[in-house]
Length: 105
Image 1 (tube, rainbow, N blue to C red):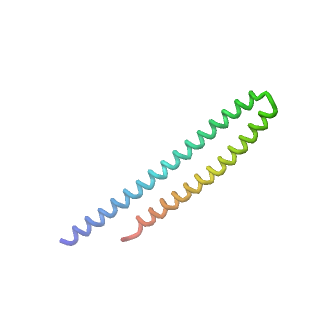
Image 2: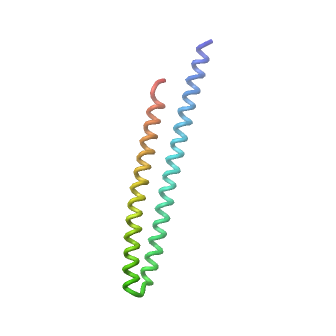
Image 3: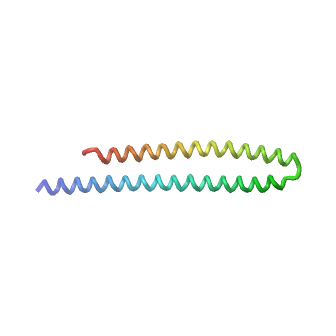
């Protein structure tokens, strides 16, 4: 009578492990989508700056736009670093979770 219970328990554990792996994969995919959304946002801002820059009449405005562009570039680099760090952390957690799921209980 204990053999079916043991099989059911290990089957239940396997299902739990698979569910946890799927949840981690979904978070990873959501992170990738968030990265793409941030990139699209910044590319749109760059496009707008390019159009505005083309229409600039005075050198003062051009100087201000260059400074704004440099500030945005700094923000983008910082955001990219944070996103890359977050993705690397998510990947590490995902890999660790896969390793834990493979270990015998």
